[in-house]
Image 1: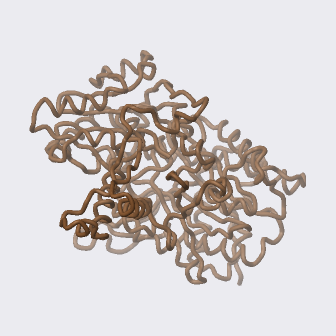
Image 2 (image 1 turned 180 degrees about the vertical axis):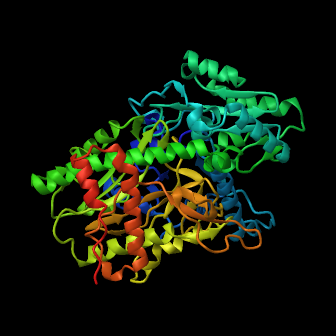
Image 3 (image 1 turned 90 degrees about the vertical axis):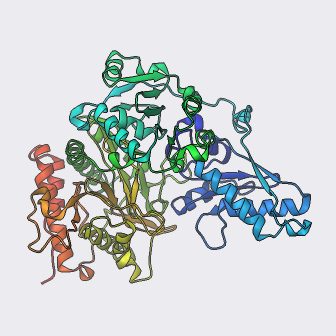
Length: 623
C-alpha cells in the first residue's frame, strides 16, 4: 500500500498492491509465497476486498478476526516450517523504500521469538536459536511488481505553492526554532522528516496533484543546528514565489534522492552525532543506515505542533466548515428536489459529481479531501465504498433506499469531512430507525463529553458505542481520527478508538472526527460524522457560557468539544421514544448553531435557504 513516505493515499506509480490484487483500499498488504497469495486488510475493507479479489488466486485475511494470524505470526510459522524441512532460513523479500522501519524490526523480532518457541537450537545441541528467516531488501534490483507492470505511471513532480501566513499562524523560522529547541532536549544533532504532511506543514507549502485529495508534495527534509534542507525535484521549487519563500527561511534545496547519503554523511562527521527519526513513520531504507547507538527513535517534533492547531489555523477550519455547510445546503436542496419532487432516480456517480460541483463553487475550494463515499442501500455497508461507472455495484437512489454520503473538501484555509445518512421515502423500517437513532445517540454521547486533560482518546470511545451495545450491536471501525488544517483529512497522532495501543492524549487545539456507525451487510449502512475542535471547558468557546461548576481539580484543566461541522441531521429518521430530553435539546441547539452560521451565506428564498430552514426546525416532541 505504501510509498517512500508511508502515505495513506499514494501516487499512482506506487499503487503496486492495487495493480497486483485489484484491491484499491487505503490499507492492505499482499503476501505472495511460492504456492499461494494472501491479502491482509482491516474491517473497513472486508466487504470491498471480498468483492474485488479473485478468489482463485487470493486468500483474504481479515485482520483482527479470530483465528486470523498477523502477517508476522503467519510468516514466523512459515519460517519455522521451512527451517524444519530445509534446515536453512526462509528469505522474505521486502522493498526497503515502502515498508516502515518498525515493520522490519517487528518482523525480525517475531522470527527470533518463533525460533526460541520452537526450541530449534536444542535439536542440534545448540542453546542459541538459529536464524530461521532473513529479510532480503533486493538492493540493486527493481521492485518485483515493477518488472511486470507495463505502463506504470511516472512519479509526479507538481510545484509547491506558498501557504499564506494568515492560514498558518507561524513562520517557517518559528517552527524551525521550536524544533531545534526540542532537538536540544533529545540531544539530537539532526532531525529527519519523511511524512509528506509534516513537510508541507513545516515549510508552509502546499501542492496539488502529487497525491489525489491531499495537498502535499513528494519530498524529504532534515534540520540540523545550522542547516535546514528540503530534498525534492527542482520543478517543485521553480517558481519565484516559492524560491524566495525558501530563501527567506534559510532553506537549502537538495536532490530528492540524496536523503540517505546525507544521513550517512552527517553521522560520519562526528561519532557523537545522533539522528532523530520516528521509526513508526519512516521507511526501513532510512532507519537501517543509522546505528542503534546513534538513533533517537521518538515521535518527531512536528507531529504535536501540527496536531494542536493555533488560532489562525482554527479560524480557517471554522470558516471551511461554514462554507462547506452552505455547499451541502445547495446540494441537498437539489437532491431532495430530484428524488421527491421530480420523482427520478439519481446514480451514486451523479451524486458524487454534483456534490463536488457545489463545493467547487465555494471560495477557496481546491479539491475533495478524499474520494467521496456515496453508498445507496447495501453499498452503504461497504465502509469505504467508491462508486464508479460500469461497476456491477453501482446503484441509483430513489425513495425506497437510504444513502450514506461521506465527503469533504480541501479549501485553501481548511479541511472538512462529514457523513450523513439520508432517506427520502415514507418509512425506512423499524430496524433502520432504531439503529439510526442509536448511532445518533452515540454521536451526541461523545460530543457532550467533558474530560480532564491528558485523557487518551480510547477512553471516550465507549460513549459512542453505549446505545448500540445495549442491543448487542457494534461497528468495526474507530470513532474518531485527527484532521489536518488545510492538510490531510486523516492526521495523527490521536484517535478515538477501542484499540488501546494508541495512548496519545487529547489536547486543546486538536481536531477530531466523531463518527459512530452501524452496518447491516447486504442491506444498509448508517454513519453520522461531525468534526470537533477540542477546547478548554472554561473558555466560553463558540459563545457558550462555561458550566456553573468548579472547572479545576487539583490544578487539572478540563476539556470539551466545540462543533465544527455545520450540516443538519435528518430528524424524521429518529425514534424519539429512545431519545432523552437532553439529547433532543442537543439536537435543537445544534441546528440553531447551524442556522446562525450558514444562513448568512445563502440567498433569501433560495432552494438552499428553504431546505436549511426546514431541516433546522425544532424536532417535534411527544407531549
